Image (tube, rainbow, N blue to C red; front, side):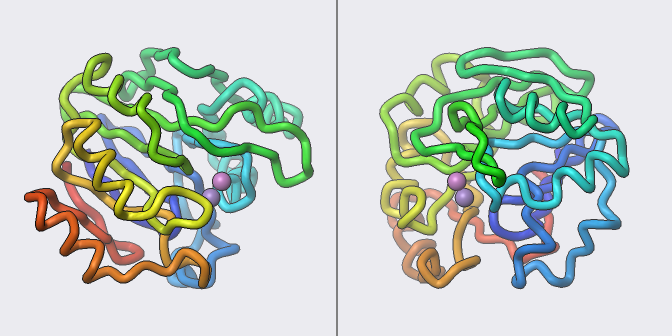
Length: 226
Ligand code: NI
Ligand code: MN
């Protein structure tokens, strides 16, 4: 399973011959100016919640590629009104797709869509197949519910956690999550895009290293195999 970072909370996952893009906020992100959203291919889009910095270029990418949007029922309905195919889920549910199993899990956040229509409850995803198991937390606070993930999903290969603080948890709380989910390999997201979520990379990595955990802060365009 190959995971490439496109800035903010956007990742491209390649697994079992499919391309899955998570929260494609690209053209609106000056830090991601090297990435051309209009060139991206996607079989599926995973949308954690309705906020503009997660919906981003999703409508354009989905229409051009015929991508299937996987998200909560309300977000999928919103895309459906734009003629985009989707697969609606709700918290705690999992479903078998042709690239693997996806479980939609709790996040503590909010989820209004860009046109102010209600975006349902925000969530995260756990995605697994024979290659790997990846937790994508979405925008969330630290929550005790995260302790349920190792009880209900396969052993995580890695987890993508927000750590920019202010709108989500900061890296100190993300370090606690790593313990809750029993995963020592954390990929950071939702940092540096805006002034208010700028992170001291050295301090954050040091905090994880002190507890023998790895914090990976990918450069935009960089990828990692998990
Ligand atoms: Ni958000
Ligand atoms: Mn966000």
